[in-house]
Length: 140
Length: 186
Image (tube, each protein chain N blue to C red):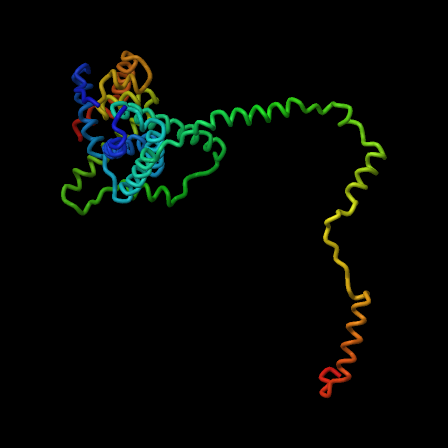
């Protein structure tokens, strides 16, 4: 920045300008709080410059357009007016779908209650017999 | 391309040297110290983010231009806000606070002289704030910052002749508004 002396101005303008410059420059003050606030901002600006550029890696330049192209291609192929999309499914198709959905899987885990099974009553009879043989009969 | 390691320190030194004047320029344009500080903070970060890697010699005109653009954005926002919230008047406390901050301390020696200087400065600031944008820019850049006509033209994005014209009109308007006695009373 170069300082000029405003010599191209008329004398009256020049005198006024120099006086105004003196007044304005004398008023350039910051209090402690303002100076601290601006110092914090300058520190933030320094950190911005010190941080390395976050550049897109080389593979990104290939992967990003490829991903965009794949999305665009799939959207381009989608045709909402196709007859298969617009017509409702037939009853046979619905039955087939429900059969497939409801069919039990071979490896599915099945929970079976043992309350009604023979083992429950057998164990109960054994427990009652055991209780009857106990001299203390704590649960009698 | 500048030395990468020294660039942050050089930018810091430049901003430290330019911050106080930028705050005052923004304060005169906005009539608000807090808004002026916000504007300068935004401008600092903008300069670092967008032009920090540029040669340091380009920073001063870029910083001036960024500050001016931020001031213009602020003025546009204020215009919209005033149009929407036209019924809102300043809270009495706000006005009192402003008056208190402007009042000089009369308990110190030369209080009368300081009071006169403070009043003259306020009149000058009000007159500068009332100038059209381009004239205000030309005055600030040429008179206050001391840029050459060519540098001011680069910052303002116009020809040297336009800068001279704007400056001449600005000085004429300021002298007409402040009166011939202004220079003498200060």
